[in-house]
Image (tube, rainbow, N blue to C red; front, side):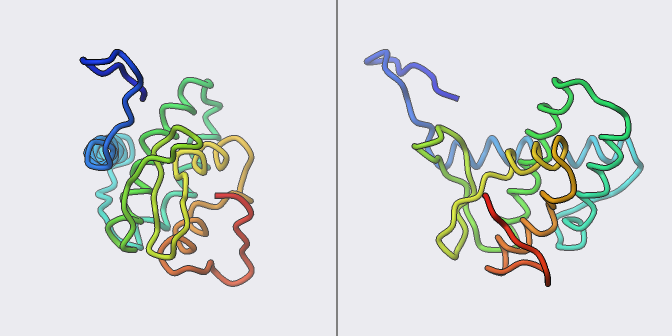
Length: 150
């Protein structure tokens, strides 16, 4: 993500607009991939967010390589983040401490949807994407859920 500037050769922090455009593109790639792979026409609604944990289960059942996990975490994470932006009043931004794109919610929290997807794929259901979405959009999760790390 870091790239050299033309003038100084030093690191350049991507603008929020650059991050948002990049994440929208990745999210669109995810929508296309799900359509091709599963014949599902997913969109940008809360109901579509509910499908993500099931898609993770399908992917994990195929014993993917580390590279496949990382690629899917990027595109699915962009989609999850874009759902939060569109449905919950969040916005894409850059987290300086983690040098990573992040979703800034209207509640003042910073979420890392790509990391959350990777954890869901590699560590299991306790890292529910639906709970992450709910917490990001409503400020609280589904009954009985906890979000210990964004």
